[in-house]
Length: 367
Ligand SMILES: [Zn+2]
Image 1: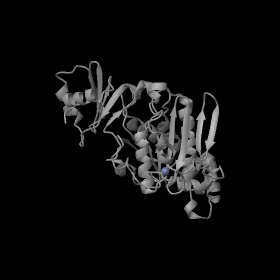
Image 2: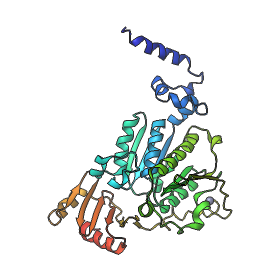
Image 3: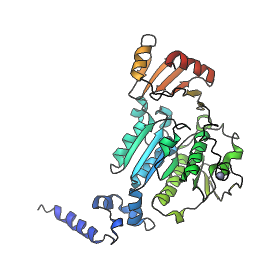
Image 4: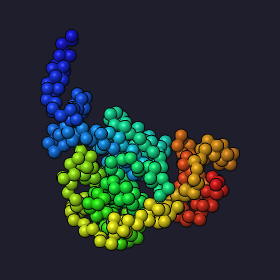
């Protein structure tokens, strides 16, 4: 036996000897090494880690908060993570979206695809799946069912209310997280135990929502701080340490240094968690045309997928500035830039008028 092999085996045997007697708590040697600093943290311990390894979560939206939250969760070692995102990487994302780099932006990779690649490289023990999709009432059941926890990484309240409706109706916990400028918020929602997002926000919908990161900007430190707070609560839920949840709405502003923790009351007449009226999940409240808030409109009118290669050959004779990768096709029709996804969605940059976008869609993409 080579000499250098001996200490490693000795340490393996020592670690085996330290295994707890409960076989359900058994962590193999590789997992002991990988997660040692987390299992040394007494409130988690080997038993909490074991539960985490058997857990699953889905992150809705992989912008700045979603990117940071997914990286923290994958490094912490959950069993399975699904990342849903409808967008592609752009140069303006890189200032705060920690998973992506210049090559991703240059190739206009969908965020779900780039995220899957990066996350798998971080921790090969975790089953990671990136799905390019726009979550809406038609696909919510299919995309969100089967996970222990849903995490908010979205940039809009329509999707958050849809996730809230799904979570309350299916009895699954989810974590609300949002940030804009230097300010952010996060709260855990446990159906039947805590107030929900509708309790907190529904009366205020429409007020202040015009402020998005596309209009007032957003700082890297706040999104990463909010993602950290979100994942700390996720770890409590996924390791079976619900008793440690603080149960409060946390808000922070990294510019003024103001931090607040508020106990949110349940609305006794709440549409979602009291009256169980799931308007957003039923598709009665969600518009089919989404204003993305950055001088662009998204159209998603087709129910079926699109053959991007066929569309490319159809457009090539008339449009010179045509670029594509395996996931999307992009072209310019001055003054607009059109990005078409394989699921049939298209984003029109250069207009906020849905009528203009619809007419361009009909003309270049078709029904
Ligand atoms: Zn409620």
